[in-house]
Image 1 (cartoon, one colour):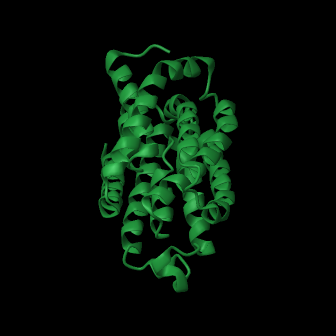
Image 2 (tube, one colour):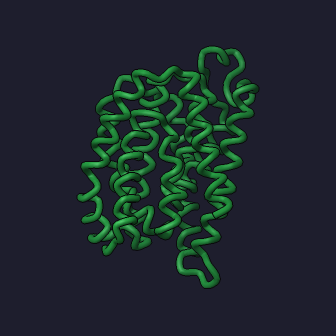
Length: 259
């Protein structure tokens, strides 16, 4: 693939932020999607970033393997896989559509993300709506409808633009997890869904030999991001973590909606 200097700078910044996002502030990479979509199509974005995310997920799982809450993963993941299939079907229909299929996808993704972030903020005041009332203070089990909705949204948005993060942020943040539990559980959720997406990305022609070659050049930035994120999270309080995650998610979604 041939890229301009600006595109290479954006790609390396994106790789760094996706690494930082895995071990630092989940949601901090939200700005990467609107940034990438200014210079690349949704298909190119998925093809370039997805293999990097799988590598970052593996590193994060190794680092946080003791912190995952598997009850939350098992409950939401079947719906996420369903969402990935739906996203794949949408992509097959819209990619190359006359009249701006890519532009339509951008707006759909952006509107969905804005809704999810605002919904997540509302749930901070009404957690009993989405998790067991008797366990509200201690991070109980997610209600089935909530796991279904967030898993499906996460699968669709991650298949269309590598941006399922806001849905999972809303899902996990509403369950009262500690920062470490949040990151450990998110690592497995992202890894399973990203690995599931790979065959679909190949089928759509997004992941190619050229895109994989590009990935090799971006690995150093990704690894640096993982290291910096792991150090940064040691100095972040849970309240700051929650607030900045939702703020970043909302800012990126609103920006994407109007560009």
